[in-house]
Image 1 (cartoon, helix red, strand yellow):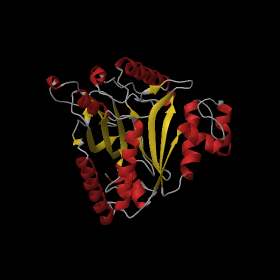
Image 2 (cartoon, helix red, strand yellow):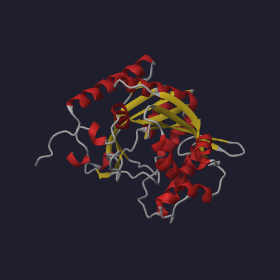
Image 3 (tube, one colour):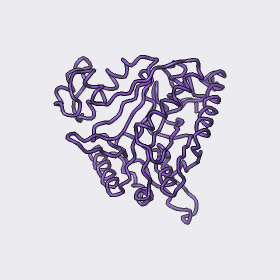
Image 4 (cartoon, helix red, strand yellow):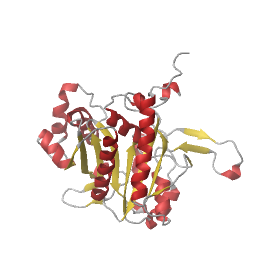
Amino acid sequence: MKDWKPTANVKVLRLRAQLYALIRKFFAERGVLEVETPILSMAGNTDPNIDSFQLQFIGPRSAGTGQRWLRTSPEFPLKRMLAAGVGDCYEMGRVFRNGEAGRRHNPEFTMLEWYRVGWNHHKLMDECAELVKEALHLAGRRATVRDVSFHQLYQDSFGFDPLTCSEAELRAPLAVYDIDPEGLTRDDWLDLLMTHLIQPSIPANRVMLVFDYPASQCALAKIRPGDVPVAERFEIFVGPLELANGYHELTDGTEQRERFGRDLATRAKRAAIQPPVDERLLAALPKLPGCAGVALGVDRLMMAMLGSERIADVLAFPFDRA
């Protein structure tokens, strides 16, 4: 067997260690507490576009439910800690997503997630941009920052309002790709426009902050009412790489239960696994303080720092060598 060596070289492994030190220093200086939460959970992720790994605990029943799920993010337990009064906090650790493998994806990867009490998504995305710029500087790179609303980005790129235009208008710019439209929703077309046309056009030295997404893509974000409601959510890109996804967090447990129900209904239509809803999160949400949170892919950040196209270049041992 000849593939026993790491795919990342020693220089890259040292840079990763320096990045971890930078991240911990960044939050220590700002009084944000580092915490740890479980990797195995009794609840899975209901998001129809994310699949969780399942495991079976064979120990005593008194220890709890046997079926467990590897976390796809530390979001739910971190919010429970916030609801208990911990205050600003972050976690950096491994997360797992089944089926996600490729040039830019590994089923096991490192996520940095943090929460700021009393902040909205705009204030948090500015802090996130600061951290990304410091990380790029560590690798000797500089970048400019642009912040733009989802609406304005699509208006500038394609000449239509993505929140109100017809599906035919959404599909037109993608005609060159010969995409099978069967089963695709409006949100799918919006995502394809982003991944196929917008992201590849972002300059490599640009940090782009996109905010106020369609309400249909709210996930766990607050929805701001208006003539056209929007989700108070943001994403961060460095060049074509998507790095982070953040929210002005929803604190309404009833609304969150309804969203989980819609997720499960979508999964049922796709004949996908129905993971159990996190009842402890729902019980904690009424006590969750107003806050904003963000999850950032550390391996993607490493790729941006190095200008790499392959996640394997920044991992010691990717999935096929684990």
